Length: 326
Image (tube, rainbow, N blue to C red):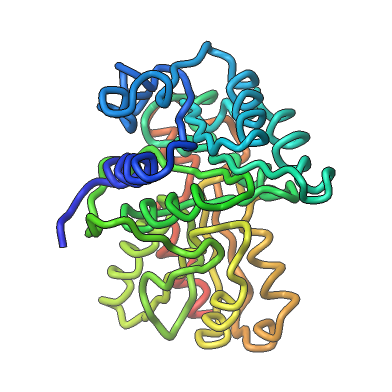
């Protein structure tokens, strides 16, 4: 199978669907000739034209509002926001309109839009361009929230998101754009709401999201040298969440560590912990659950300080050892 980047997988998913469905179009800032802030839409305006790859003013609220209106009238828009931090400017349209209109209209009007946006730290983009705010959107009924960690998942889940009749928030970690993976050329779909066990193990379960999946896998390889067998579970979609896969993994290993880049306080890791605490898996625990998350500070510009604000491989290794030797 050929190998392409995470970025190329996302572009390919959109292009394939746009060739098949003329109701799909993209709107966002600088997505035309420039190709988007990270180059994801580069070359698409040449194929699909400015009517379907639409440059917008610098107004996230207007972009989201236009997409909601278009979706209600039968189109299937894809929004590209340059940084996930800018979702905050469009929150009224996303939270009070997109997420609620289908419910408030008794199912007579649907809002099939996808909001794609780069999230996370690691690029030196500082406090206003490096946050991980997925827990905000997870809290809102009516939204689906997807967070793929590799190129294969990104293409398949984006296809599923574009087919869905609900508004979908699609997070793309900045550091993943250049990572490569095996991706089929043909169109395919990964079911929304199905987790993936990235590495099987028997001693401890790590539930990790986005970039943290790669750090967990790296930690697992190091720990294997010391005889500690780590299982890594990637939820892939936060809403809906595949609770059963996580529960079964914890029942098998008897230990759980949750790792995400977002600030630990109020982060999605707390939801994972509550799933286990409220399930039969709780009785299988042999050690307290550990949560790894970002520090409660704005992301610094300085690269050394930036790195210190989010969990790293060494932090995961330390947490695993403490849990296994409890």
